[in-house]
Image (cartoon, one colour):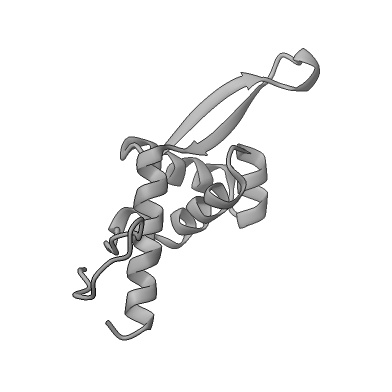
Length: 109
């Protein structure tokens, strides 16, 4: 989607993104855009989905280069691994562009 109005310096080009638009992925991207790096369990619990559902959507985002998944040792050096999730620069740009497209739609453009 393109808006015919001139863009301000630093403004985001609105582009509707089918990958990000899925409700769970949109919420994941919104949380990551707001809070930065977030633990998998925090994302899962905040969104209110199962491990499998959260994993599936994170895999889709990762496959498109929108998030990174980093497994690290748990607190206190425990044997289990904790997955940390973060938007990539490409993911941040795609999310913000998608939000701009949604705002343009709501504004009737």
